[in-house]
Amino acid sequence: MSPYGALEWHNLAVPALAIAFFVRDDQAIRRRRSGPRGSGKPARRAAIIIRSARAADAPFLPEVERSAGEAFRAIDDLSWIADAPDLSVERYAALIAGGAAWVATDEAGDIAGFLCGELFGDALHIWEMSVRRDSQRAGLGRRLLATATSWAAATRLPAVTLTTFREVAWNEPFYRRAGFRTLPDHELTQRLAETLRAEVANGLPGERRCAMRLDLPAHAVSVEPRHDLSPDEIDAIEDHLYRHNSGATGLDDAQGLDFVMRDQAGQMIAAAAGYSWARTAELKQMWVAEAHRGRGHARALLTAFIDEARRRGVRRIWVQSHDFQAPAMYEKVGFERMAEFLGWPDGHSNVILCKTLSDTAGQPA
Image (cartoon, rainbow, N blue to C red):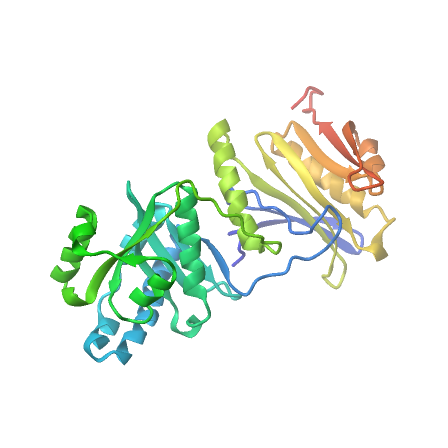
């Protein structure tokens, strides 16, 4: 299954080659990871990716929780916890919908750990954090916790709270090292006191349970250097931006607009990648393998891109092209220079071009 969901493929006949394009069936605009335009520099993928949880993740979380719970078998009086019921898929789905849940995925895309919380007026409360047994002792729990606490600080919450087991190495002592403090009874809020009572009613030993709190600095914001964001992390950022943009405009019709060209062996030798949204399209990348340049492949891809944009009712197509790339090619098919930025990159310029499309009657689409 493609990561973009169902794909609808179309083929255009070209001597000894094939051009194909696919239309994504989701609504997210994805940034293409090719570095500065045309550089072809690949992104370095991190072994573990932490991202916001999605509704589709919910069915997989109980299994991770169950795997993490196996660690309790080493504690005689708590070994039964390993066989205790997990949170339900429905409960996890509700927490994910609340927007305070994160998952850590491995290189295969499988969920290695997660943290699910709930936003209350006075705090982010962590209901469950679990790391798959084969991924433990690698700092993943610390990363998940740091992600949640940083989010809470950026959301300007005063605190993060949780309940956990006393004197279990990966419970109370772990959170203490992260800055949490165990709350005495007289500091318990009504919410935390009720949570502890509910746990006892559900069979947990009250003498082994405690509530903890991490006080966050007022309006705390941290800046972390990350110069190797993964494709999935970039996707998550783009998704947030798109939700804002579509909400602000009331327009939610984004689709990828991408074409590839392959040789007889099936190897990709050229591609055009972009998107359409709100009757506008942007061609973000145009690439032709060096050995195949000068044969009209870029022009063929551009023509296909324009035709598909017109079919979708796009009014304008935008593209950027450095002066050492192909602004003249775009101008030959009706693109107009709208702006030129000198010194981008140093010693060159970046040209912004736009093509206004017309309908069959010759009027702007």
